[in-house]
Amino acid sequence: MSNQEAISGNGSGSQMSNSGMIITQAKGPLPEGVHLPLYMDNHATTPLDPRVLDAMMPYFTNKFGNAASRNHAFGWEAEEAVENARAQIGKLINCTPKEIIFTSGATESNNLAIKGIAEMYREKGNHIITQVTEHKAVLDTCKKLEKMGYRVTYLPVQADGLIDMDDLKRAIVKDGPDKTILVTIMYANNEIGVVQPIREIGKICHEAGVLFHTDAVQAVGKIPVDVQADNIDVLSLSAHKIYGPKGVGALYVRRRNPRVQITEQINGGGHERGMRSGTLNVPGIVGLGKACEIAGAEMATEAERERELRDYLRHKLESNLDYVQVNGNMEHHLPGNLNMSFVYVEGESLLMGINDIAVSSGSACTSATLEPSYVLKALGLGDEIAHSSIRFGLGRFNTKAEVDYVADKIIEVVQKLRELSPLYEMVKEGIDLSKIEWAAH
Ligand SMILES: *Cc1c(COP(=O)(O)O)cnc(C)c1O
Image (tube, rainbow, N blue to C red; front, side, top):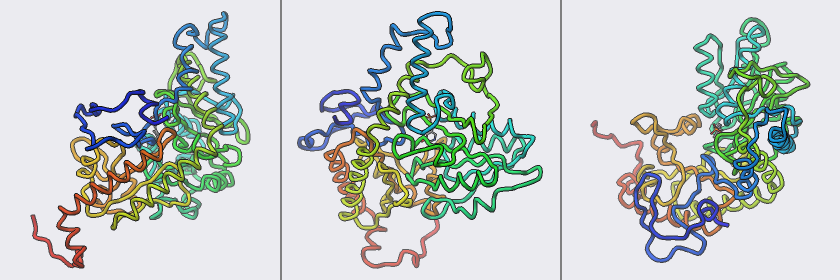
């Protein structure tokens, strides 16, 4: 099944893009199995797997009970479904069902983990360690804690996006009021796809007696994640990044060796062992459970398939275009991620030229201005090259035909834009751009 069929099942023809712009299709018929707009942005979100929707449907209709209703069959039915989901998640990450706390998504999970630990362990210490390429849900939470008087260390990343274990060891404070209470490092990065040495980080934390939280949103269901072997104490995950519904996530909280305590951030009713009050989103939770079950069963073959497609895309782009570079360590990498810079091409023009393809650029829209991605900048990329970067996010429903279409389109547009680029012309003529004195403007 193609992406488009998974989303809407419709055919071709002119379609509205999400900005309301009419997307005109390429001249001539589209290749077999390719429908526009084409989705290749699976780190932002993923389409709902039809099997997940099937599992959820009854809980929107006749199985509508409140999982906290302990005295009748409607409640028991909902509770059973929720407990089943806990077990499905536990099986995927190797924890017990009791260690799963349901939330509204990974943003909430990250907030609950970091603020909840900071509050609970305040008497023990005041220091938290994270790193600069974390998702905003972690970075903004840490900034908030700094305002509240906590001390936060933001570790740098190396040029390949990985943190240095010696930096981490040096940053851990063993005694005093500024003793480190928490290390929070993401499992895999959502922009550049690099996978941090989580097992080693967890080991360092445990040897130092420091709790270890990881934002594993991009890793869970894509690569093997094992909270025991990886020495993880607290872990955030989200359903809509693994072909489940939006608005539901979970937090794994270790119950032994050590038993982690977290101060609740939402009060009222004491659901989820007192850590997260609120009536459970039963259909969403059922969807998250099913998404985990499918991801676990298909991970090995799907990862291999996506890795092959990704490498094929990379090879095709690299062999048809000069001045391209791949960002992030490609050895420790998510199978479906490719982040590439197309030097001497303006990122916005490139995205406009491929506006029937959904990918992400190396620019982030903060208020009115277009800022280069802080993740790419952390790797040492300049503003220009960050702006000329594209994140390809391959997923379960992407096909080889789609990869070919995307590659051909990118090659065509990059070549066209470079024909118009005086910089590119000069480089081709052998002029050293660094020696040119530009007129001030
Ligand atoms: C998407 C994402 C989040 C946020 O998850 P939500 O469920 O959308 O709140 C957090 N961290 C990473 C790495 C993500 O990719």
